[in-house]
Length: 326
Image (cartoon, rainbow, N blue to C red; front, side, top):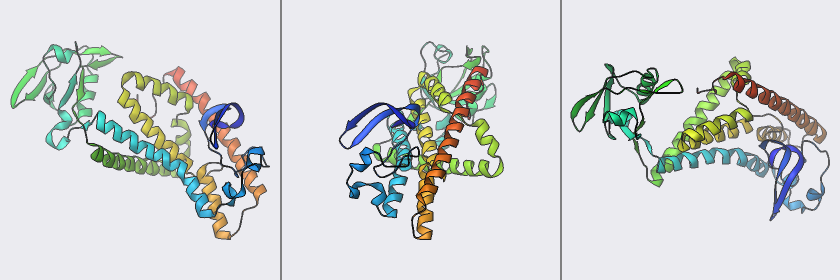
């Protein structure tokens, strides 16, 4: 279902699966037969009509654990796929060790770069006398000089050229009209690099989340973005670059997967925690207690969602930069 558990606005059944939209269109959820919703204490008609062997609650704990892990795992796998597709079609920055991070890719038409004769494949040596070591350093230096003339020294097939473009001004920042040089990967290399990149993202997010929770929990709430902000930023990024949008979606997908694994009812991680407790005590946890804990968890999640929506709107109105960007 698209949205949080609640009254259904729209539903469609395909095979044994029902798809739909609820009255609370934030996020989404999957409910299996035999898993009572956090908002009900008894089985509904669909559950009663499902054969016992097909229900979640009749499965052994190890199968239940696999089912709970499957959702977050698919979010992480989606990141691998999106990154791999991006590397196959857009490519990855050329090897910095060979100067690739300073090699120009596409040069925009009618841009300051094209007007002074910059070409794809040129390797930038310096800007205004400062050596260029990274692509981010190059871009940051140009953005800080809107409307100004800069001196750019490039290497073109072993020949050193000095060019004097006057930067355009876009959104208050200097604009030259260049993009980094990319090399496209074959499907196998892209898949491997997608896996490695996703692992690095997961590792970074887990370490960051642990650090924030254990040192400054208030920062997590203050700097987090909710659904309104994510949709707003997604629209902006999609307008700027399709591949930046794909990268953004990959990051968001990993975020969702990791958050769903947190041991907070009624998230998948909360259900895994309950399965762990049942395994330790070698017996089921009191169902009324589980219902109460899930209901409290759902209430807290709804309250947090309301806060995020309010905070998102306030930040958008105030023009506050998106977390991790600007």
